[in-house]
Image (cartoon, rainbow, N blue to C red; front, side, top):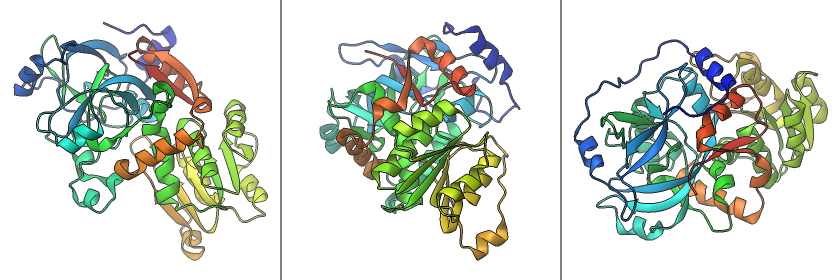
Amino acid sequence: MAMSASSSSRALLRRIGGALLRRRSFSDAAGPDSAAAAGYHVAGGPSYMRGAVFWEPGRPLTLEEFHMPRPKAGEVLIKTKACGVCHSDLHVLKGELPFSSPCVVGHEITGEVVDHGMHTPGEIINRFPVGSHVVGAFIMPCGNCFYCVKGQEDLCESFFAYNRAKGTLYDGETRLFLRGNGKPVYMYSMGGLAEYCVVPANALAVLPDSLPYTESAILGCAVFTAYGALRHAAEMRAGDSVAVIGVGGVGSSCLQIAKAFGASEVIAVDVLDEKLQNARTLGATHTVNAAKEDAVERIKEITDGRGVDVAVEALGKALTFSQCAKSVRDGGKAVMIGLAATNVVGEIDITRLVRRQVKIIGSYGARARQDLPQIVKLAESGAFNLQNTISRKCKFEEANGAYDDLNQGKIVGRAVVEITE
């Protein structure tokens, strides 16, 4: 059944059809995993659930019934409590990033553990017993590939080869099958915009009772990405000056992480005064409206003509890529975390890059097993203000409208969909 959504959101989803992308076909025959899923149910609970399905650009998300997703070894079944609304999902919905379809989007979740896959090691069951509150990271490391073994889980080969390239988990199979016909539906990360989801245990951290489900959902992507950018990519030190270009959900998280890490100056850059006002409450010492003044020149004025030690680009646009690179001092670090539509290219002054030792660094997420527990501790200590970062809460049935407003720039911080009680 179709979700209720505003007429504007339906119009948006009709408008945002794009170029045809290479996708796995929905006509794939249902296989043995579908039959296994049909016979699975949570002890004392339901045998099916609802999930929000993306079919193709230009078509609204619809709520569909699924067989209860069945976890396999090393995986955990989560009753999803909340799921953040992220620009990465929006890129998929608009056809700007190729991804298998039909699929369930949503990749920053909190929830309650309800089951473990057969043959799951005892240490995982002990760490995440049934009833545990958990938060999930959008990068779900396999733990065994070349990069995971080296501690670079943010480059996990299995995550990119299977989940991002095929919409599956690491046995090459999705865990989502429609209840009506058993057809497979693919998973963007864990496919979190659903009442239940399957998550590899390596991507989970325990969420203490003191942290609420709804606000904590953003820990697994927005905050996770900000933490990785400043801790690992920038290797930020106390006393560094930091500029953040684009202060939406992820960018506003960068402001708070920079403040928590001891930045001397935190400069927020955006084109919306409302977002810049909110940035002040999240740790920004200076704000720059790039629609009213030259952002690069203003950043240099604030930093005595040098530029910042670290600049972070959180929008994924060619213009802001250039601004980010130009905003750093000699020897500074420009960290790019905003995903762009396919084939968007950023330009760089090669001679300045070489002579002035400017470092251009890409950063995608963080390292779940080592970083996610630390991020939870930051939130628990109060160093990260979850309440001020969340600007909207909505019901499961209102997800289309939330993505519509995100596309139109109407969401100041982060929106979160509350899925189950």
